Length: 430
Image 1 (cartoon, rainbow, N blue to C red):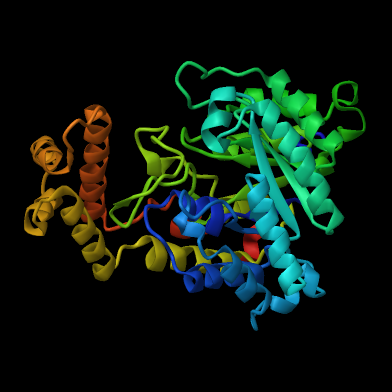
Image 2 (image 1 turned 90 degrees about the vertical axis):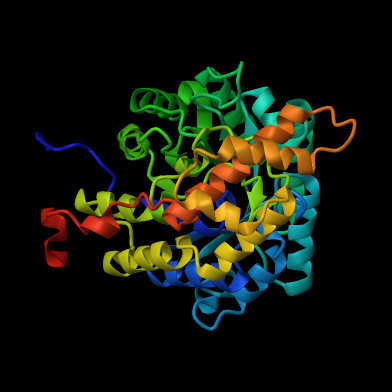
């Protein structure tokens, strides 16, 4: 039409709240809490959910319940019958970053007869970022991935190959990356047998112009051959610089119709501390504001699509109610949770809880607290005092943030506050 943008009639949206979303929050949610959110999202119409990570619990204790989470989901009285392996349509994905994680996923399916429909592995076009995330060189990882794809495909499980740092890397010294390298990696993955590619902007480095440029390349038969079809490509955008939905629109214009998101727009790099205790995670945080680098919000993404007349299959009022419940009941820190954090930090830093509560009013004493904690924590012969200092600074800044805001993370879903816009397509919801 002369005055209209060109869009597909329908898009597919996958929600990653309990995996990518919760891994960034510095709190461990229970299996029951995660299960309820997944169930609610399925009942709202979401048909693709990423629910856990089979990575080592030492590094990701948030997912130590991976097997339990899957077992309870497949046995769920509310939604079990809606899962594809139980005769429904809903697809379940789990992360399997290495061969050991793939084996765990396969062992689960062998034991229970059901398991994830899709598993996911990831390469970064920046070798430094890749080595930090996987602990392997790119050459070794490609060899391992080829073995894993064969293993899971033989058991009826699809492999999603994720390509990261497409539009830039968060690592110092390797910030600028080459779009052509990501095109090359996408083709390698698909040639190895991956079912589709998650084209990922994991830290919010993308901008709309380069997003359009890249997906135009991905859908160019001269570059991708038979893989130049949008069914093989899914867009995954973070919004640490506020460009998430603009990037979605650019990808949509290029021809992409598969997207991912999280409730409240949470997510990002795995936390390196939870409930006041240090964990491994993936090391030092990439961004100054760790909690502000999440994905585009599911609530806003669905509403934006529907307001443009693009069908998502999601019940908007139900989704917005879920979003508000998640913000109010999950992101809000309870008194008991706060006490647990305060106790853990006090024991680690050797500072009484009553003094830590002073951070509620001011953070001007953080430097003093850090120096005092260093004397308590440092061991004779310690050769990395700056690393310890950075850790202690992070502890106290996080604690100050939690005391003042009372939230594990910031809800960046504007629609759960402002409700739906006055679009002709949404007039029945006004």
